[in-house]
Structures are given as structure tokens and as C-alpha cells.
Image (tube, rainbow, N blue to C red):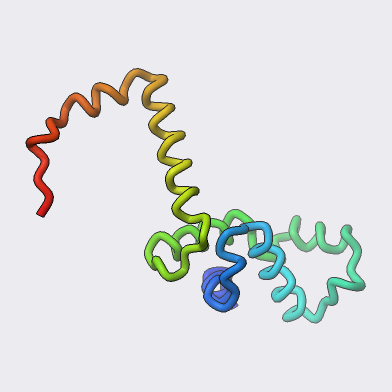
Length: 118
């Protein structure tokens, strides 16, 4: 099964995994290991690290990207912390723009009375 499909399956079936990439990654890896016939209770840390190093398990970065994309396009897959992550990211972005002196220039280009919402 592809990483994308595993991520969708996991965040659909287990809502608790929607807010933690570490827990989501651990559960996906556990499923992948079972499919390979490996038992996490008998594996060594070295065995696991070799699988990760040799790209035999899904990349944590890919898992995170798929989770984020699914949550971006499908509100029902968003976790309880989704909105807060978005606000934090936006605040960080605004702060960076302010540090560079760009934020006010961008906002000065808009006059509130000129903005209409249909």
C-alpha cells in the first residue's frame, strides 16, 4: 500500500492520529512492518534504523506532507489542533514580514473600504 493511502486510512480510522505526526508515523511504520512479516516486539532498534536508512519504511516527511494535504482539502480530517497550527504558522509568517519591513507595505496597499465581500 502506498504511503498516501496509509496516511488517509490511518487519519480516517483513528482521529487521535490527526494531531501528532510522531504517532501517525509510528502507527504507519508498525503496519508496514507487519506487512513485511516483522514483529516490533522482537526487533532491535538497530534493525529498525537499518530499515529506515534503506528507505524500506515510509519517510516521516512524506507522511507529514500527506497528512497536511489531506487536512488542507478535507475539513473532516482535521484534528483538534489544526486551527492552532495554522494560526501559529500565520503569526510566524507575519512576524518575519514585519522584521523585513514588508508587512506594513503590503497592508498599506489595501484600503478596507475598497474590499467587498460577496
